[in-house]
Image (cartoon, rainbow, N blue to C red):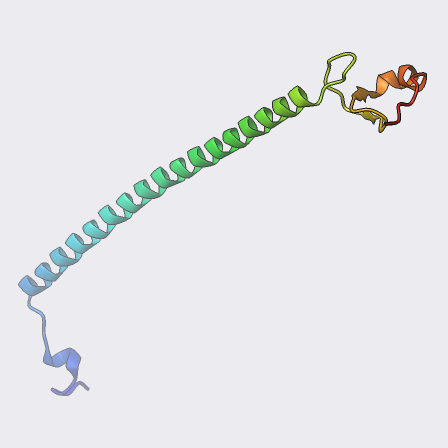
Length: 114
């Protein structure tokens, strides 16, 4: 059935050659497993660093927003009660800005025209 030209029959592997090949394959398999473990470790380390960086960016954005809000509250306060306000009443006749709770007081003021 097989002829001498059949590659499977023409090249026979000796038992010692087979053992050498198996050892070489085992060595390569161990090396690949070691490299895979190293890559997994590096991936975990990078994931941790990425999470830390995201958290730092979030905290930085929160600090910036808080600082901006503090600045706005410092600059935009009611001229009468000196509290920051959520609703603003701006009277065009003067340069003062009042909290909306003072609308009744400011209605009775005379309008000043330059």
